[in-house]
Length: 303
Image (tube, rainbow, N blue to C red; front, side, top):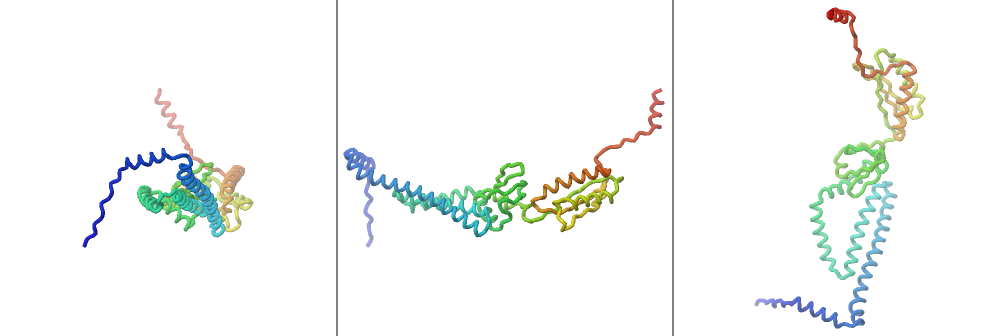
């Protein structure tokens, strides 16, 4: 015994539309108010209220989550990252709730969003890679907000890390945005991670200058400089005998925040001290020696 499916009814769309239009035209104001304006107006107002209040609550909750992350980890970049991603997730829930209040079938909408997300994900693979790289950077924490880092050929202070990009501020106050994926796959040099740093100097003096005197001058300057640490002790030594000069290597240690102030100050002090002591700093030059007998022969050839 087989079940026969009843044939589907043929619906005349034009006729049905005409019936709805005629029904609306025949309605008086009270009927329209009770059957259309109040029910649908209430739904629209409730949907707007859900969206406005939900958006506000999403912002408040995401900020609270960010503050909780900052309190537990002391990481401002993690705070920014968690606040951003939680806000977008909560906002998505608010939008779905608002559409549900309007009578829209949200189950099919969620499926549509999932399919659209898959299509967008395939077309935005680089963006997803940057997002994943941002998560890995937050897990391994090779740097924190305020650190001076070098990555992808750029040097700057870390301002914040978003969902997709890392924001750096350069020394001349420019803002540089680097994709998280590029930063994570490239080498990262963190100049602020350790409390102390070593400054590497190389000073050239001429072969006619007194090496011992030059070293004593440098050592006195390092001993009296306020930025140079006593431990580890600075190194002053002959590094190389170059073609035109004797190279002295100088390796003092300073606190990381004082690196550039010490670098500039020590360079100036050593140059002034060398000038006062008569220690010559050679520079590229050419010496031309003319033999007198050669000039005399040329003069005779003219006559």
